[in-house]
Image (cartoon, rainbow, N blue to C red; front, side, top):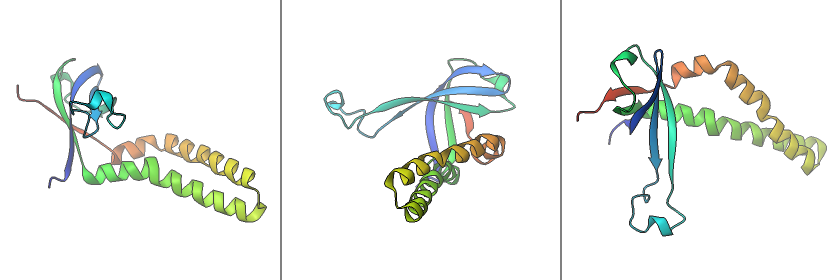
Length: 140
């Protein structure tokens, strides 16, 4: 089993040393013959920004492979899903215990994410050093 997460993509735009790569993320059953008639199948296009010193070696429309390690993928999952969930649940239970009001607990839990995402925004450069992608040209 590989310790890398890989996706095929196409370079959508180039801005300085930043490559914008469009990848198509599809569920396991999206390629099925009956996927058009099934609600379980889905396919989403994502744009990944990749900072590289070799941006001038790539061109728009070129096929590339974008990859990262499982550890980086796990770190991104923690930042995007686990920490916000833990914060919301903690605030929900604490406010519910103090006020005994479901409404205040729910509103407080939702509003607790505002400071979290503000901190993520402020620390985005530090986080981008931890959550990174590598790019390589496809052999045609």
